[in-house]
Length: 299
Image (tube, rainbow, N blue to C red; front, top):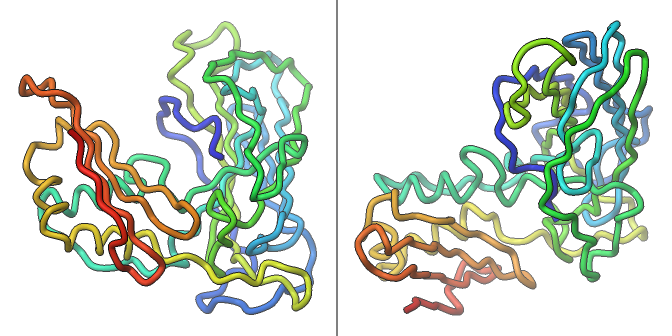
């Protein structure tokens, strides 16, 4: 489940620390020290530590920490769970990117894969008390926006885990990945804008690689079809391609891509009110072979 993501952001500070990165997908879990990175901005220090590389199909852990080193309190924004640091893993580079598409078809693919934020290969870590097995319903958070203060000299910390999947039982692929910690900084108390939605995230990231656990420790199921290839299969279908291109992008509500029991659901809602029509939905189901196994167009 993804949490604490849908917030307006302006330019943040992103520090990339290369650690245990490889262009070839590693086949077993390497030994090594924790991977760490730290950045400092506006007298706020944000740190990220991984207990080794992330694991495919198994829980791996990360620790995020925020220290206010300045003389004044700072304001920060939390989502429904009010986690002090959001931690995410992005592993799109481990998947086949598929082929380019022209016009609205290419735009649909870009948006569905996460252009502008989100995407099926950007998965949030969960605070340790909310971790559940992949076959259980995750614990949700209210869709609230919390505004908090961190006093001068004070600290916040979170320990969070990722179960090594794409949000279901299917393991993530082995290969290059980036883990990012983000502190949703609003500003120093008494200074600057009071707009609580205009956060200026302070981010730190570690370039690493998802690895397959050692033999006999689980996580051995095959990774799912690349989401980009699933979208390619949908766009190659004349009916779905016509559905995508029949109306301008301004009618799109939510290009949708969800993995369900090893099958990708590729869909698009359209706001028909723009042209005096009802909201409509079109969807194809693409299996692990890249074959269409279901279609739905409503109304």
